[in-house]
Image (cartoon, rainbow, N blue to C red; front, side):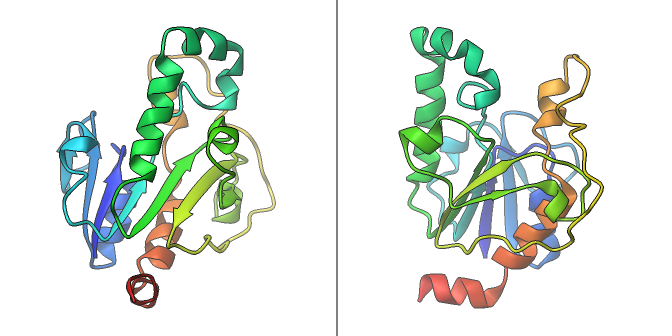
Amino acid sequence: MKVLIACEYSGAVRDEFLGGGHDAMSCDLLPTEVPGPHYQGDVRDVLHYPWDMMIAFPPCTHICVSGARHHEGKRMDGRQQAGVSFFMMLAMANIPMIALENPVGIMSSLWRKPDQVIHPWQFGEGECKATCLWLKNLQPLVSTDVVEGREQSVWRMPPGPDRWKERSRTFPGIAKAMAEQWGGMSLWTKASG
């Protein structure tokens, strides 16, 4: 499969799909952290290639509930509308299979409820972090390794210039589950046939 991993700088999901034998490329305004197929630039430049699947991590800064106290200002200056438009552009892309990932935010009420809400602790990581998935022609992820000891260390990160970047990083267990469960050929056959 040809898989676009949109808005990903870490290469975590891209590398899991590459490891499964797929033709995967990440795309982000930031450079990739690890060598591999990566387009550094605007996803709109590559969105219309003949992709079979896109997994997208659109920026959540202006649309997530954790920043709700700033929503009025973001609506007034257009940042929230720009965030919503970017999210919806990815959601409406002409790609057979799509997964959009974002924290709990306004898209649940503006567009539709997510198809699934997952936490890293369901995939071998001892972390609580509600993550919404909006799916097109993909099945919800199945937990792979439930961890009992859970904390919210991501939300307790001290302030710093890279805090936003670290808080948005995809957990390895979730990246692996995406590649293994959505990258299966039986799923592709079902979605395309």
